[in-house]
Image (tube, helix red, strand yellow):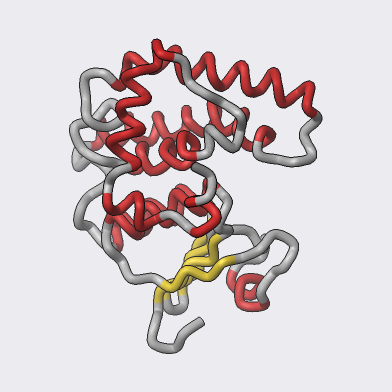
Length: 205
C-alpha cells in the first residue's frame, strides 16, 4: 500500500460486491488506491487487515472495514458530498430496507449464477427466476430517474453491479422491461459509473 495514500480498497475486479464500493468511491471522487485481489491469492496486507480475508476491504489509516454495506455507509459518512443516503430517518430506513431486499431477493440468485461450480440445470432455473423478478419490478423504474428515488443512492450502488453482469449470467431482459432497460442505459452512461469499472468489468459488455 502506497505510503502517500492513506485510503486503500482491496477489491476483486470481477466481484459485484467490490464493484459497489468502487461506485461509491467514484461518485464521491475519492482518491483511493484500488488493490486488485485475485481469488485464491491473499495479499499479506489483506490478511492482516481482515481476519476473513474477504473483499471488499477498506483500509483508512488505522481503520480496516469489510462487509460491503458497512464500507459503503462509512464512505458516505466520511465523505458526505454527494450524500448517498437520504437525510431523514424514515427515507433512510426505506433505503436500507431496499438494500436488504436486493441482497435477499436478487443476490441470492446472482451469487450462485456467477459461481462456476453451480450445475447448469440449477443455473437455468436461477436465470429464469432472476429474469422474471427483474421484469416484474421494471414498472417501478418508470417514474423516477433512480431506483425509487430522485437522487442517486446506495440502493443504486447495490443494483447496478448486478445489472451490468446480466450478459455474463446469460440474461437478456424482454421488451416489457423497458423502464428498467432505460434506467440501465442512463446509469451506465454516467461518468462516475464508467470510472468505477475495472478492466475485467469493461469486458463483460
